[in-house]
Length: 404
Image 1 (cartoon, rainbow, N blue to C red):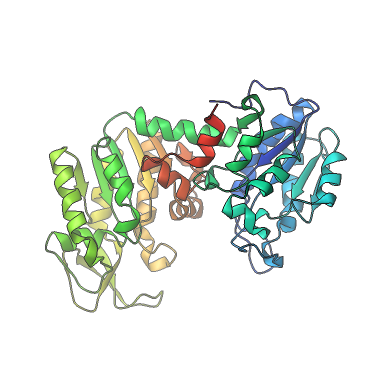
Image 2: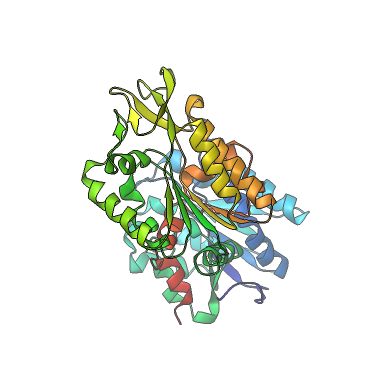
């Protein structure tokens, strides 16, 4: 793996693709700065070597149109604070309101050693997402070397994540520290996992997780299924799920997964009971029911207490744990206990020596919300990227750096 550890960035203008796609509130305040913090070690390395840093990222989905609410200028003050705190000294951080053009070229050329320049949102140009060759060359010309530290976008063949790499010689393109950690931890789970190995798969739809489940069947000993997708599994086994979410067109797929799992001695755990509601609302009336006998007009929105205990016992007995997806609608207080119980169980197992990795936007949000992010082995910054990696796909952003 071509990483930055052994490279000296002294006097080099280093173009770094980061993932600063962070949530902002209505007043443009940063609601979660974990992706900014994740970029700091790579920035610190380059600055400490005596290089300069040109940061580029996307934010949101402006779809090729300049939009005030998606401007990266709102990140400058907090990012500057994070960098200076880490380095223990004052570093100049500048912002330019475009990512290509004469003004940008001028700003990059005038950048001094140990200074940082943040470019405006790449997706203000439609050429970014289309992987345009000319646009990627315009970006590449801004720096001497290229560092990809944006795992969250590694599954997209965009101009700044993939196409750009071909404009740098193999010895001048690298993975940053974040990308290195993401790949290392994902590879550990996929190819060096100690057993028993449990995958906790949640979320709304089976269709979103079919490939990851099938790819894990040859690796895991146990799969815990939670969230809305659990009811498609329960329905496929003949259970009564009331008005719970169910993908009727996936029932045969689920039966096939259950059959494959049995043949490979993989135990699939479904929720014994559920917290049910009369409507999808934070104000809903709730009750508890066996998951395979939910009354008509009621829907399962979280795992029940028996399921939480059962799942917790499975997790605590495993040496390797992968968690992707919540157990219920944890954004609503009435339906967060199941996801919270999983977070506690994963943290406890980790404390006892298990290796745990958490990925996927909702799972990451859950461990952050409940305060368990520092109690698991690794929290991935990539949602879709991590999912596709565990599905066994080659991620374009990774392949572009590795190809020589």
